[in-house]
Length: 186
Image (cartoon, rainbow, N blue to C red; front, top):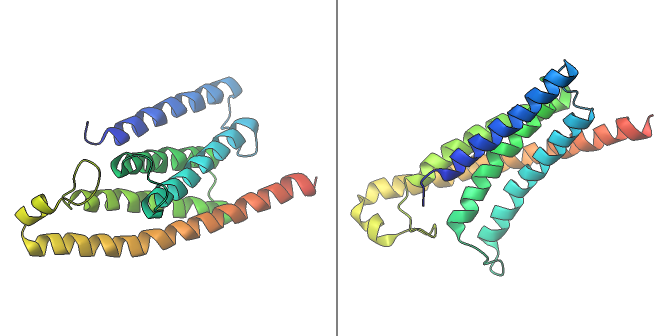
Protein backbone atom coordinates (compact mmCIF):
# COMPACT_ATOMS: atom_id res chain seq x y z
CA UNK A 1 0.00 0.00 0.00
CA UNK A 2 1.38 3.40 -0.98
CA UNK A 3 1.20 5.78 1.95
CA UNK A 4 -0.68 8.92 1.02
CA UNK A 5 -1.94 7.59 -2.32
CA UNK A 6 -5.28 9.33 -1.74
CA UNK A 7 -3.44 12.66 -1.75
CA UNK A 8 -1.69 11.83 -5.01
CA UNK A 9 -4.94 10.68 -6.63
CA UNK A 10 -6.72 13.83 -5.41
CA UNK A 11 -3.94 15.98 -6.87
CA UNK A 12 -4.20 14.18 -10.21
CA UNK A 13 -7.99 14.56 -10.23
CA UNK A 14 -7.67 18.28 -9.44
CA UNK A 15 -5.16 18.69 -12.28
CA UNK A 16 -7.53 16.95 -14.71
CA UNK A 17 -10.46 19.08 -13.55
CA UNK A 18 -8.29 22.21 -13.85
CA UNK A 19 -7.44 21.22 -17.43
CA UNK A 20 -11.16 20.95 -18.24
CA UNK A 21 -11.77 24.31 -16.55
CA UNK A 22 -8.89 25.81 -18.57
CA UNK A 23 -10.34 24.40 -21.79
CA UNK A 24 -13.73 25.98 -21.07
CA UNK A 25 -11.97 29.24 -20.15
CA UNK A 26 -10.03 29.25 -23.44
CA UNK A 27 -13.05 28.22 -25.51
CA UNK A 28 -15.45 30.80 -24.04
CA UNK A 29 -12.80 33.46 -23.25
CA UNK A 30 -14.39 34.11 -19.86
CA UNK A 31 -14.51 32.60 -16.39
CA UNK A 32 -17.29 29.97 -16.39
CA UNK A 33 -20.34 31.44 -14.65
CA UNK A 34 -21.60 29.65 -11.55
CA UNK A 35 -25.07 29.61 -13.11
CA UNK A 36 -23.89 28.35 -16.51
CA UNK A 37 -23.80 24.74 -17.66
CA UNK A 38 -20.17 24.11 -16.74
CA UNK A 39 -20.50 26.00 -13.44
CA UNK A 40 -23.58 24.04 -12.44
CA UNK A 41 -22.05 20.72 -13.50
CA UNK A 42 -18.87 21.33 -11.51
CA UNK A 43 -20.84 22.59 -8.50
CA UNK A 44 -23.29 19.69 -8.49
CA UNK A 45 -20.58 17.04 -8.89
CA UNK A 46 -18.44 18.72 -6.23
CA UNK A 47 -21.36 18.88 -3.82
CA UNK A 48 -22.19 15.21 -4.44
CA UNK A 49 -18.57 14.32 -3.65
CA UNK A 50 -18.76 16.42 -0.49
CA UNK A 51 -21.98 14.66 0.55
CA UNK A 52 -20.26 11.33 -0.03
CA UNK A 53 -17.33 12.58 2.06
CA UNK A 54 -19.62 13.48 4.92
CA UNK A 55 -22.03 10.56 4.84
CA UNK A 56 -20.45 7.36 3.55
CA UNK A 57 -17.37 7.34 5.77
CA UNK A 58 -19.44 8.24 8.84
CA UNK A 59 -22.01 5.57 8.00
CA UNK A 60 -19.32 2.91 7.57
CA UNK A 61 -17.61 3.99 10.76
CA UNK A 62 -20.68 4.05 12.98
CA UNK A 63 -23.02 1.40 11.61
CA UNK A 64 -22.79 -2.13 12.94
CA UNK A 65 -24.56 -3.41 9.83
CA UNK A 66 -22.37 -1.60 7.30
CA UNK A 67 -19.19 -3.67 7.44
CA UNK A 68 -18.24 -3.47 3.76
CA UNK A 69 -14.63 -2.70 3.09
CA UNK A 70 -11.71 -1.82 5.32
CA UNK A 71 -11.83 1.37 7.36
CA UNK A 72 -8.42 2.39 5.98
CA UNK A 73 -9.86 2.30 2.43
CA UNK A 74 -12.89 4.31 3.51
CA UNK A 75 -10.65 6.89 5.16
CA UNK A 76 -8.68 7.22 1.90
CA UNK A 77 -11.96 7.64 0.00
CA UNK A 78 -13.05 10.24 2.58
CA UNK A 79 -9.82 12.19 2.10
CA UNK A 80 -9.96 11.97 -1.72
CA UNK A 81 -13.57 13.17 -1.97
CA UNK A 82 -12.90 15.73 0.78
CA UNK A 83 -10.26 17.37 -1.43
CA UNK A 84 -11.71 16.97 -4.92
CA UNK A 85 -15.30 17.91 -4.01
CA UNK A 86 -14.40 21.23 -2.38
CA UNK A 87 -12.01 22.04 -5.24
CA UNK A 88 -14.87 21.58 -7.70
CA UNK A 89 -17.16 23.76 -5.56
CA UNK A 90 -14.44 26.44 -5.51
CA UNK A 91 -14.41 26.38 -9.33
CA UNK A 92 -18.21 26.60 -9.29
CA UNK A 93 -17.97 29.88 -7.35
CA UNK A 94 -16.58 31.73 -10.42
CA UNK A 95 -14.17 33.36 -7.98
CA UNK A 96 -16.96 35.42 -6.38
CA UNK A 97 -17.13 35.13 -2.61
CA UNK A 98 -19.98 37.33 -1.47
CA UNK A 99 -23.16 36.53 0.42
CA UNK A 100 -24.12 33.07 1.58
CA UNK A 101 -22.09 31.45 -1.19
CA UNK A 102 -19.01 33.24 0.14
CA UNK A 103 -19.70 32.02 3.67
CA UNK A 104 -20.13 28.50 2.30
CA UNK A 105 -16.79 28.69 0.48
CA UNK A 106 -15.13 30.02 3.66
CA UNK A 107 -16.55 27.13 5.70
CA UNK A 108 -15.41 24.74 2.97
CA UNK A 109 -11.87 26.08 3.18
CA UNK A 110 -11.90 25.80 6.97
CA UNK A 111 -13.17 22.22 6.88
CA UNK A 112 -10.56 21.18 4.28
CA UNK A 113 -7.72 22.70 6.35
CA UNK A 114 -9.18 21.05 9.43
CA UNK A 115 -9.26 17.76 7.53
CA UNK A 116 -5.56 18.00 6.72
CA UNK A 117 -4.90 18.70 10.40
CA UNK A 118 -7.00 15.70 11.43
CA UNK A 119 -5.19 13.46 8.96
CA UNK A 120 -1.88 14.47 10.50
CA UNK A 121 -3.12 13.83 14.05
CA UNK A 122 -4.68 10.51 12.97
CA UNK A 123 -1.33 9.30 11.63
CA UNK A 124 0.27 9.92 15.05
CA UNK A 125 -1.85 7.10 16.55
CA UNK A 126 -0.40 3.65 15.73
CA UNK A 127 -2.79 1.64 13.55
CA UNK A 128 -2.98 -1.69 11.79
CA UNK A 129 -3.45 -1.90 8.03
CA UNK A 130 -7.26 -2.11 8.52
CA UNK A 131 -7.28 1.24 10.34
CA UNK A 132 -7.86 -0.06 13.87
CA UNK A 133 -5.50 0.93 16.65
CA UNK A 134 -2.55 -1.44 17.08
CA UNK A 135 -2.02 -2.23 20.79
CA UNK A 136 1.43 -3.67 20.07
CA UNK A 137 2.69 -0.51 18.45
CA UNK A 138 0.82 1.59 20.98
CA UNK A 139 2.65 -0.22 23.80
CA UNK A 140 5.96 0.71 22.17
CA UNK A 141 5.01 4.43 22.34
CA UNK A 142 5.33 6.23 25.66
CA UNK A 143 1.90 6.12 27.33
CA UNK A 144 1.69 9.89 27.74
CA UNK A 145 2.45 10.50 24.03
CA UNK A 146 -0.31 8.10 22.95
CA UNK A 147 -2.77 9.59 25.46
CA UNK A 148 -1.95 13.08 24.18
CA UNK A 149 -2.46 12.02 20.55
CA UNK A 150 -5.84 10.48 21.41
CA UNK A 151 -6.89 13.55 23.42
CA UNK A 152 -5.88 15.94 20.62
CA UNK A 153 -7.71 13.80 18.05
CA UNK A 154 -10.87 13.79 20.20
CA UNK A 155 -10.64 17.58 20.55
CA UNK A 156 -10.13 17.91 16.79
CA UNK A 157 -13.28 15.84 16.17
CA UNK A 158 -15.35 18.09 18.47
CA UNK A 159 -14.35 21.04 16.28
CA UNK A 160 -14.31 19.42 12.81
CA UNK A 161 -17.75 17.80 12.95
CA UNK A 162 -19.78 20.93 13.94
CA UNK A 163 -17.98 22.99 11.28
CA UNK A 164 -18.96 20.31 8.76
CA UNK A 165 -22.58 20.54 9.90
CA UNK A 166 -22.53 24.33 9.56
CA UNK A 167 -21.01 23.95 6.08
CA UNK A 168 -23.74 21.60 4.89
CA UNK A 169 -26.49 23.74 6.42
CA UNK A 170 -25.14 26.77 4.53
CA UNK A 171 -24.73 24.70 1.35
CA UNK A 172 -28.31 23.42 1.47
CA UNK A 173 -29.65 26.93 2.09
CA UNK A 174 -27.53 28.16 -0.86
CA UNK A 175 -28.88 25.39 -3.12
CA UNK A 176 -32.49 26.00 -2.11
CA UNK A 177 -32.03 29.75 -2.65
CA UNK A 178 -30.36 29.22 -6.03
CA UNK A 179 -33.17 26.90 -7.15
CA UNK A 180 -35.80 29.34 -5.94
CA UNK A 181 -34.28 32.37 -7.64
CA UNK A 182 -33.30 30.51 -10.80
CA UNK A 183 -36.57 28.71 -11.40
CA UNK A 184 -39.51 30.14 -9.50
CA UNK A 185 -38.77 33.81 -10.07
CA UNK A 186 -38.14 33.50 -13.81
